[in-house]
Length: 635
Image (spheres, rainbow, N blue to C red):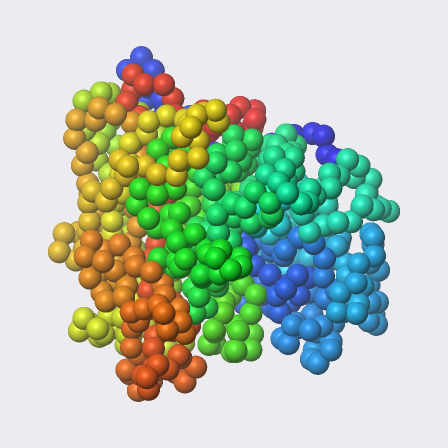
């Protein structure tokens, strides 16, 4: 086990603006208004994906413009070699894939486990000895130094989390000492509930002290308390500035189940953030699998009879925890927590299509449909995977579907007529003298060309309201600002610790073509909060769909249920009447229905993380104290 704290350059971990003697002193430099697109949740044949590490990375970087990528196969084991494409998903049984124990044989370490009749490799070994060396090689070949190995870990007591330990990963050295991925490998061995290997990581390692999974009655509760929370504490102790822990597709597996391993409730996110204040800093509430008819794979009965995904469906491709105003995310932000929004591709395969085709009935490649934007560092900064971790921790991030907006975005808050207060951006806190007014400005840039949709026929959702717009040329049509009060941290002993609502949260400003400012491709929105008397936060989201689009948005512009067109008990649905509507769409009563990838390309959203506002005479918010902790750890 590594015992030294690895502290690296901090890019504003939820940085603070503090009033002292009438002056506002920024504790960290302001971010630039340019961002880098990436993805940290995806899969190869080293778990249950189909494209090799090389194919996935090259598609993401060369075809879809990603600048950083964390390869994050499931924890556990797999018999398949992820250096080789496996389009059929069955090793070399029927196609071009390969098993580890088929010539040329790759040495497999650890306790023996078999799958598909072949020896499986534990993820700790494949992450360290296979995936990371592939990424280091590709980093040099593609001149992309921010490629690194992560894990989608199977969380004891819950479902999945996207995580990474950068540790000694140094792909930026381009063929010199590129380091190793021992840190993330050790985490997977110790804490992944699907890793039942007790070999200690031999012969290269001696990872003693592994805790076995609990089973039976109360196993979910026990695994959360005795293994999941300690895993976050372990990251906080050994890699506080060098790791992140982001629960994935958090609504999919239903509510938490005390006797098993599924679901996350609000109290678990609070536990994680308390245990890892610079590590467990948000969730992935905009899942991958966006081309599935059960968008995000959310559905009734996901985890068994009578056990539905929370919210049953997604809403505009986003889970209910973030999509519902006043819901779980707003509850956490209402504590002033550094708990932020992220998205990811969760790339596995294209369903009915080959991984080499453009259509999809399941997933999109990293960067093809969803992009997670993190701050672009200042010129001259060494590009390395730690820049990604710093960006995740900062909360200065936003998620976009379908290239609705670009990598150029500015979201800032300032006190009107009081320059000494400085400026706050996403993830930061603006400290305001009581009674002053605050101006928030959001500037987004629209793309000039097409996105990656293979379809140029008109958007069927917009066609319902008489708007003719090609699917591969979406236009931003609405932006909502959501504001909620910050009332303080909820203690674990409080009866409200399990409360996942914030009744003060509401959409308080909406913009569109009639009231935003246009300058070329830039759209600027300015809102003012007068006479600030209490602590609060403001987040934003936008869509290509205006309000009152049948089966898509309500009269206020909020997203509606993404019902499954193949489920006759659900609906309503959007017809696809254009002659170019593809043949793989669902047909009901003789009519093609907008479904699979067409439905995804039709319904696009972006989500912007919040800015916090604190009245100057009030105590610091948790986001501030956790940001200060990160700063102190850097020293």
